Image 1 (spheres, helix red, strand yellow):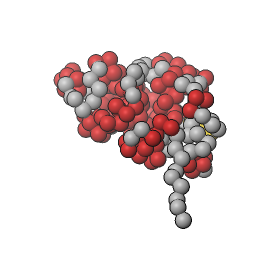
Image 2: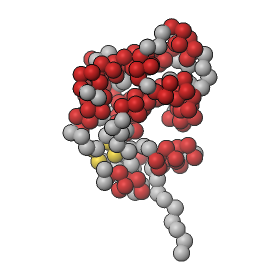
Image 3: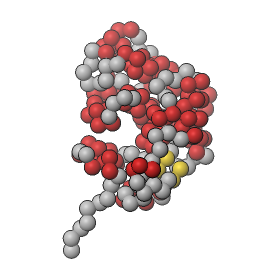
Image 4: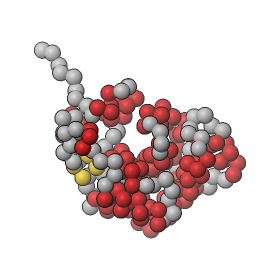
Length: 193
C-alpha cells in the first residue's frame, strides 16, 4: 500500500523550516505568555520581510532575547540595545529592536491588568479559535476587522509594530484563527482544539 503525501498549505512547501513550523506550531492555540511574547516579537520583526527569514533567525532571537522572558527584555537598557543592533543573529533594525523592548514593558502592564497576556488576548475570540474554511490561499485575508480591533487596543496600550496585518499574522500563528486551508491535514487536526 502506497501512502499519499500529506496535503499542506502552499506556503509550507518551500523548505523544511517552513514545513516543520507549519506541521508543529502554526495555528496551535497558545496560552503560555512567554510563547505569546515570542510570537509577538517575531511577527513585529517580520514586518517587511519574509517569514522564512525570521524562522532562520529564530534561535538567534531566543539567545539574544533571554529566551523571550518579557521581564528580562523590559529591563534592557542602552548597552543591551547596542548589543542587539550588532547581533547578526537577529534583524538589526533599530525601530524594531526598540519596539521589542517597549512592547515587553507594555506586555507586563497587560499581565498586571488581566492576570496574564493570554487572558487578555483570548477574550477577543471568547477563548476559542475562529475556524475558517478557506479553499485557496487567495481567500485568506491579510487582516480582518478583529485583527484591526486588537491592533487598535494594543496601540492604545503603547505597543508598537502591531498594525492590523501584523496582528492577523500573530493571531494565525498562536491559533486564535485556524487559517489552514480545508484541504490541509492540519485544518481538521486543529479544529478539535
